[in-house]
Length: 208
Image (cartoon, rainbow, N blue to C red; front, side):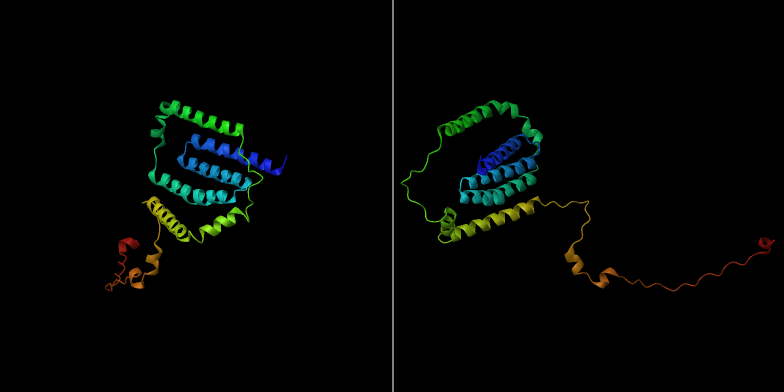
């Protein structure tokens, strides 16, 4: 067995496990993290099929932007999982039927086989990653930069919305420390001088 076949079964097994944990995880944040693991394994499978651009795009777009935003949205909404699980068994038959159709389609595609490239097809000069990268960063440079700025703004907004200030936390603002002055920390209070009272004289009865 070639090493590529071994890597294929490894990535496929981890992908199936991560996909199963996405739908069975009790914590919503954990489900999103398992989905990110599933995307990373799918990207590895694309690389094994020599589709480098699709694999890199899956990592950069989905793992680097979309799933991170999903994670921040889940943290921001504070979803009550118990309320979502109340109607699980009610919609389970419909979900099972749809899942059965999807599984039957996948089995039919695998059983019939994939189309192969004919021997008379013209050979591509260079790699597809080089050709697509050259096209994106020449003719589509401005759309790529605009999309990057939009994703950056969305991520900063999600971080700002999910940032919660706790009342019981003891934090110091560095800006206040930098702009502090001596007169704000030390206050001299004038006080009148007082004379110490003399000690009372001992009486003869006390001596006795």
